[in-house]
Length: 242
Image 1 (tube, helix red, strand yellow):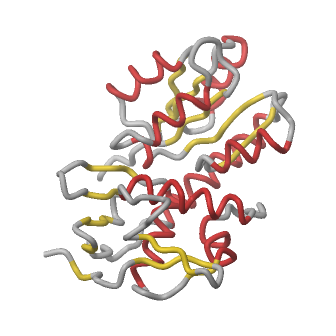
Image 2 (cartoon, rainbow, N blue to C red; image 1 turned 180 degrees about the vertical axis):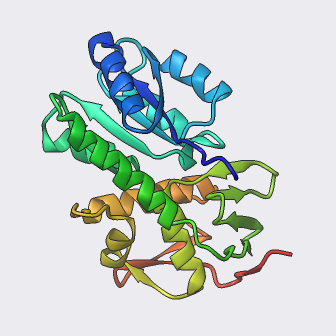
């Protein structure tokens, strides 16, 4: 009988009185959990371990959580790891800032461990559902290959760039209808999380991040184009790769 893989979670928080009990709680509830007290320690874990989800504190000394997350999103594999942001900051501005960067969820301190556990299950479930049973085909456009199965782009220079789940869904929808326009409202629905109302700003930020990963010029885009009627469209030379 094949052994079922247990998801491994990374808890990044400089406060040991939060990090260590949370790792213990997660281990008691069916996960493997490893802690990191800083962004540097988190990078070392990610280098050595296969992580299914990151719980990331934003307010850390030295390199803070947002800076670490930005670097993670720009790495070749980081964009594929779901992230729940954990912070004592309660303002809507900070919540929106984190979610606009592409985080999968946001929990404020003090938190109920059972609520956090529920959110972890929900994020992992969404990620599982986002992986279709039959393999989705790789597609080529503007010299770029999109592989939806691994949520990645292969650029003309050979570099591989990871995508968040929201970016991956958005690009799939655009490539399904090359030349067709997706409204900002449609994009907001595509990238939204269950029970959360995604703003038009978040939709525009997702487009901005996707353009950057495609190597497209935001001021004069040639791949991911703006429709002045109120939406976005991809170039129409989309074809199967191979």
